[in-house]
Amino acid sequence: HLLMSATAFKRDLDDPKTIQDFCDLVQSPERLRLLLVLTVADIRAVGPNVWNNWKAGLLRELYWQAKAVLTGDAVGGRRKTRVERAKTALTEALARKKWPAKDLEEHIARGTDTYWLSADTAAQVRQAELVRKAEREKRDLTIDMTVDKARAANEITVYTADHPGLFANIAGALSLAGVSVLDARIATLTNGMALDTFWVHDAGGKAIDEKGQMGRMAQRIEDALRGKRDPARELTKEPDAAFPDKSRAFAVSPRVIIDNQASNTYTVIEINGHDRPGFLYDVTSVLTQEGLQIASAQITTYGERVVDVFYVKDIFGLKVRHPDKLKSIETSLLERIGGRKTAKPAARGAKAAKPKPPARNGAKAKPAAKGKAGKSAAAAE
Image 1 (cartoon, rainbow, N blue to C red):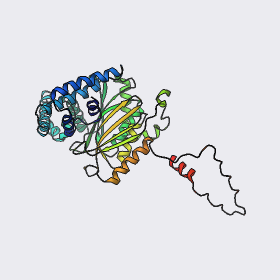
Image 2: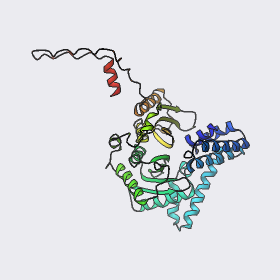
Image 3: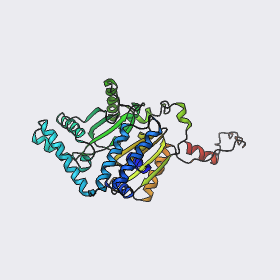
């Protein structure tokens, strides 16, 4: 049952290999049904605030996709069928809204296979309306926010020109707004525009339904994307202010796992660390600096520990395979989230070296030799 929860919460369920690997271990529909019951019971038994609609939706999605494979539906054929089904469903829904044939054809052409599998028809209808309005009014940035009652979360959609660092800037703005990111879907349409969707909830694990607060959150995102606010600077002012004292008492060892076997087309990067404001912004900034393209993200919080999983490609749209590059990514991430190894401090009983008096007659004193203390200071910055 730990496998089922880990797959549902930490892997991209739209990746065919994710479902196939899971089914290879489960092996039968009956075992899948029993596994679902056991997993739900185990999570609900942990505590009253652990189970939520978001987790229920992810487990439900994994169950139905795995069942389709275990009952004989081929993965490749199923994916193609799902894409065509999604296009047809959206076409029919927009036709009922009296969309002109030209507008409908243009919008269908904007989508990629990944996009068609990333959301249900209701969400894609809202996104189609948003995109058409933005294109008609020639807006360079459009932000939409709704309440997803089934998942007890807010769905935030950002439509703007795609560029490096976009995901990180949105994540930084959401951190400044004091909300937690549950999941994210990143889509680049054929017209070069990004259609990024985030699901968030407040500190109490609930959706924000107050219009004033929703408006302020949208304004923070817009200000960050237009350069009016700097998340990197603002998040360093009081990084621990939002956390109670008891959360700091738990030590969470930072860890970065890079997996090239979990997906056929993406490198999967899993990052574990102590939850804090700006954590998602920090790690996505590093991924951007390393020249990686983020395709999707799964964000899960377990008390004081956060687990962020990213499906990425390099600048050429390929998996990251070079050992030196993989090491650079791992090192940079560990440094940013606090896992860098530093030199051990001097023992308490050691006597400090007596400083030499300054040279006379204006002669320059020789600089002190760099010792362990110098290395430690440099490492600690």
